[in-house]
Structure formats: C-alpha cells, structure tokens
Length: 191
Image 1 (tube, helix red, strand yellow):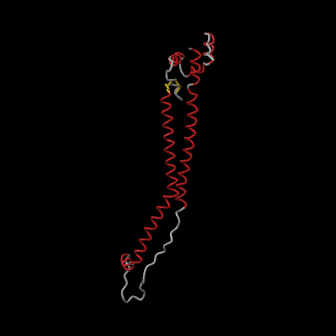
Image 2 (cartoon, helix red, strand yellow):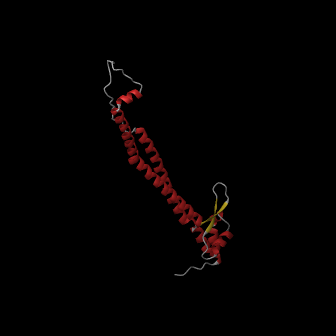
Image 3 (cartoon, one colour):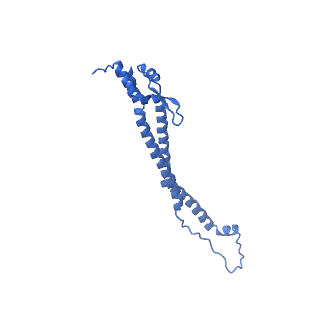
C-alpha cells in the first residue's frame, strides 16, 4: 500500500479544513517544522490567559512527565512512611517511653526514702505515721485517639494528593500522545 499523492487542490482543501490549527501557529511555521524528514516534532501552543505563542517540543514534555512521575513516586514513599509510622513506629515509641517511665518508677520504689527526701518529705523517728514504701500505679492509658486521628488526617491528605497526581499523569500522557497528531497529519497533507 503506497502513500496517497495529494493534488494541489486537495492540499489547499486540507489546509482550509484544518484552519483551527492556525490559532496555534502560522502555516509557514507548520511547513518549516515538518518539511524536514526525521525532524523532532515541535509545535507552537497558545499560553492560557495571555494568548502568547509558546514553542513546545517533545523533549520538554517528556521531561515534565518524568518530573511528575518522580513526584508521584516521592508521594508513594512518603505515604508508606506515614503508614509505617502510624502502624508500627508510633506504638514502638510509646512502648519505649512506657518502659523508660516504668524503669524510673521501679528505681524510685526501690529507693523510696531518697525519693521522698528529694520530694521534700522528711519524717522523724518519733513520727506517728511513717511511710514504709512507695508504690506507683503502672497502668498506662492508651495512645489518645486524637493523636491517631491527626496522623490519619495527614494520610488522607496524602492519599488525595496521590489520586490527583495519578490522574494528572494519566491525563498528561493521554494529551502527550495526541498533542502533535493533528499537526503531523496536516503537515503530511500539505507537503
């Protein structure tokens, strides 16, 4: 199957039918950009809001895609760290602190006289009521729900950011595939 040869009339008609492409760049720019075989596709796009023509090439777009994918990977890693902190590290730290406090309490219970003197309680030999020891209650409250809720809130925020970034990357890839297609098809028809 060979390439179809266009007559001059068909080329002019193809150009007229694709006039919306000229909002993006001039016909001369289109001819120059695609006149050379093997030339990297480059196109001009209107900058949103200003109407300024900007030059876009595939390398810049691919670099931007790689940057977005890198950011997505960093979000995934950060989310993994948050899950690890919430499910493991938080409880390990609480356990370590409880162990430390229990050790301090046991030490004070073993040396209760020094502890009471340090706290400012002194008793004479003739005192009617004298302590015979010190005992601490060693039950601890669980981790407050508000602390876990704050971590869960941060996790939810990261998950939302990740979903939005994933959608942005998917949309970007889809647009990247079709961005130059209309220009390439039009350029082929006017050569």
